[in-house]
Image (cartoon, rainbow, N blue to C red; front, side, top):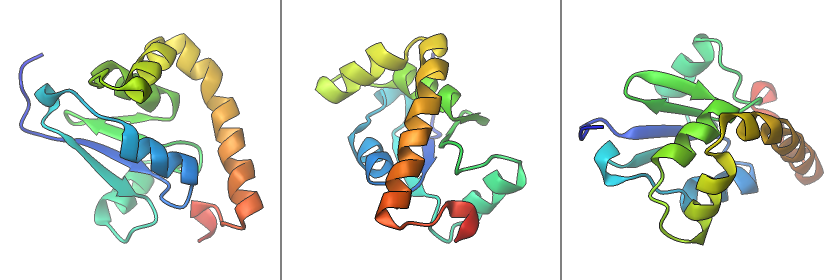
Amino acid sequence: MEKSAAKVLLIYDGECPVCRRYAQAVRVSQQFGGLETLSAREPDPRVGEIIAQGYDLDEGMVVQLEGVNYHGADALNVMAMISTQKGWFNRFNFFLFKSPKLAKLCYPMMRTGRNLLLRLLGVKKLADS
């Protein structure tokens, strides 16, 4: 792929400790112009645009790459494929989620864990806040 001036945008739940750590740890290859992270709980018009397009941010994060939105397991797969693979976290992320099938298999369990964690922490779902 040739170098893109547009950054990768990752929209995630900033109140979820696991989601927040993921957003802080993941790194994308320089050819993609960097990574911008955005908590879905922030008052940003891009969050409203994603929701208006029908994406449920309680069901998964969204990655915008080169004008295309990826949601949930597809977002994890895309992030794995464009990651730097530098550092243990990014290598682990790549090897675990480089397969779309494995990402789709793992994602529902991860989402369930996220929802349980938020409930235990007393954090409302995005749609309820």
